[in-house]
Amino acid sequence: MAEPVPAIPLRADGSPPTGITTVELTWVEQATERWIRFGTPLHDQILDRRRRLLSFAANSVFAFVRWASNDYGTLLSRLDVVRTVGPGEAYTTLPCVAPGGELLLHLGGWPKVRQALALIDAIENLGVDPCVVAPDYWRHAHNRLIAGYRPRAYSLARHRAWLLRREIGA
Image (tube, rainbow, N blue to C red; front, side, top):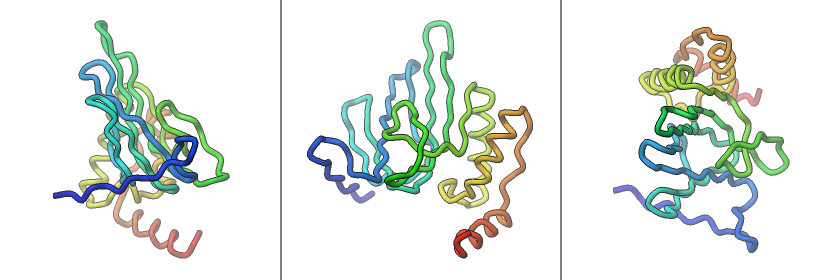
C-alpha cells in the first residue's frame, strides 16, 4: 500500500510555500480532462470528486495534459512538459499551474499531442523515467513536432550522456 503523501503547510495568506508549484487537475468525463502524464508530486490534495491539487518541488519535471470537448467534438488538446522553477527564476504562466514553469515542450492539437504521448511511452519502454530525461531532448521534440517532423528517438546512450553532463555540473 502506498504511503500517504505529507501535507505541505500553507503560508498565512493561504498560498503554498515559495518554490512549490501547484497544478489543479479536473476530470469531468468527456467534457474537461486535465491530468498529469508523468511527474512526482510532493503532495496530492483531493478537493472534491472532480478536482485535486498536486504540488511539485522546484526543479521537478512533469507532463500536463489538457483536453476539452463539447457536443460538436474536441475543443482543446494540449500537452506541456514543464520544469518547475525556484524562487527568483523566470517562468511562463500556464492555465491551472501556479505560479507557472519553464516550458520544455508545448504542443496543441490532438495529432501532435498523440505523437508526444507516443514519445513518452517509448522513453518509458527504455526503462527511463521521463522526469529525468535531458531537458534538451524535450526542446528538440517540441521543435521537431511543431515543424511537422519526427523527433529523433531518445536512447540510453543519450540518457547516459545527459546524466554524466549533469553530474559534472554543465
